[in-house]
Length: 126
Image (cartoon, rainbow, N blue to C red):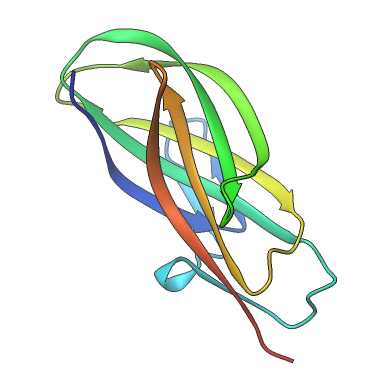
């Protein structure tokens, strides 16, 4: 089975409209977050689209990990995937304690394998 991430975006908030469309607010260019106070937590949401060559419903565990591979936040769900169609995943907003300076990785465990979706770089400007 080939499962790949086709798109991933980090932002402040994600809203889903009744027609199924998603609105992403506060998109972070180049998946980089600039903070001015390292003592304040970072609020993040994640939009991820995956492609697979199978049709099935599969349990996944979403995870946010810091640069030392420590899980900062996780959530489980059942994801329905259809071959040749993207399956959207939205998650958040999450309050992430500062990992400054540094980065966090967002991805998911599926069938026991870690699938990396995105890296968010966290920079400090005082």
